[in-house]
Length: 346
Image 1 (spheres, rainbow, N blue to C red):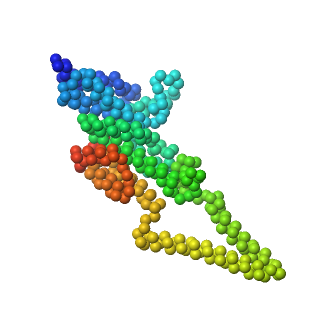
Image 2: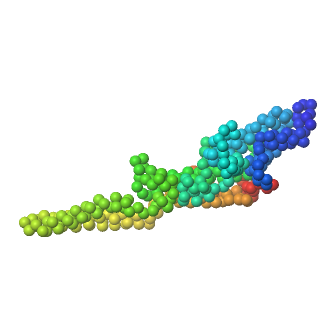
Image 3: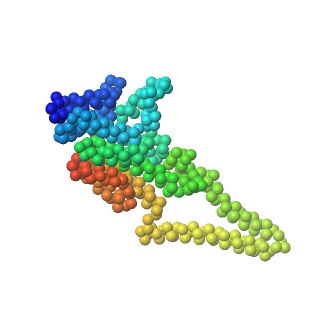
């Protein structure tokens, strides 16, 4: 029913929203399959209906709200969807296998599935737990969502925050392996094994005897040269002075190596006793601080006060969280600091 002033009745608004969702969001083709996309759009449509009814809007204005809500939802999906799903178009003439069709359909109905960031850190960018998150698309969708308070929904808040935290820890983990992990560097300063191993930590840290030989060869050959020089000189009865100096230089060279390594150990021990932090160790400790925050977001029920406390603690140690992440967690804490249900309840 539509009133003379153009506003809608509650039943009419709900009917329009239901028809809109059925028209724009396809149902899964397989029986009993669930669509996260459809469920989330239904939640947003309910909030659009409530807002339109509160403001006494007409059908066109409700449609505009639904379109904007769908843009936000699509923006979230696009920011983390696999490339094969984003690149697919129904107008393509390419023949797809049944498995390819199933993959694309599943991806089209899945907005966000939590990944295992530690597995991704250890295995690298080829890990099945490493999502390809588009940061710019995520930030834009988050900004649009936060600008519409009437769309506020606990599951949406969690998706935005979990995606933001996951992206931060994943990108920082790759930065660690590229720039802070000890090892040989390429011409631009990146760890020499990072690209070839796709960031696989075990492959980057395994012992390579070729590298060991390359790094040790100057010392080895230098020592052998002095030793051979001494042997040759000692065999020359006419050159006792050369034998004397070669042996002394070899001895000084050996003392230099011992003293240098001893000084390094003493310096490291002194810095540790004085409380100085090893920059490399500190960089990896920050990853663990970020992981603590990520772990606290594991549902289905989250304590938002604990999440915010962990974010504040990690910030004090040097972690920098996005402004959108702070905005979302502050709003959630203000709503209910103890209980945050982050999974669909219906």
